[in-house]
Amino acid sequence: MLGGGGTVESPSGAGVPLAVGCVGAQCPSSSLTPRPRSALRRTPLGIRGRCNSGFKSPVQSPSVGESSAAHDGSLQREILDLKDKEVSLNNEIEQLEAEGYCVEELDKHISLLHEYNELKDTGQMLLGRLAVLRGVTTKDLYAEFGLDLDD
Image 1 (spheres, rainbow, N blue to C red):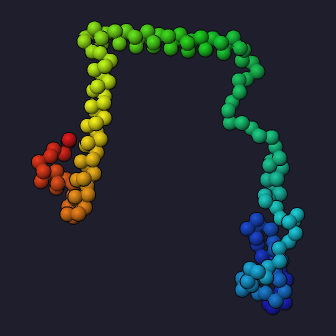
Image 2: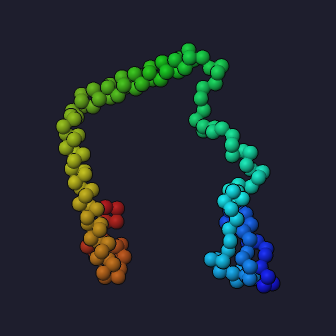
């Protein structure tokens, strides 16, 4: 019908009146006349009441009945557990030192392992690029260069 009238559903769900002379979806968007801003609603009326309720944090606060003594008791238990763990770790360190291990040697081994991993990663990258250039799998290149797949 060419007389205009009717409404088109806007993204917010509110009806927007069609401009005179438009027929349904054939109307260009520039000819739509939006309603005044106050008429648009972001939420349906049924949900509106819940939007104004107070914020409820997902973090649970201690209940009123829980005493600070109980909280202090759990903290004391946690402190004792941590002290026990510290003693256990110190005993393990002393045992390893008695077996001949030293911290400096461990640091050297760690740095050598880092260097090895960087070199291995570089080798893997080169093998991958070579495999792409040749159009073969890296598994084929491992066999060609006499490398073990578990390396």
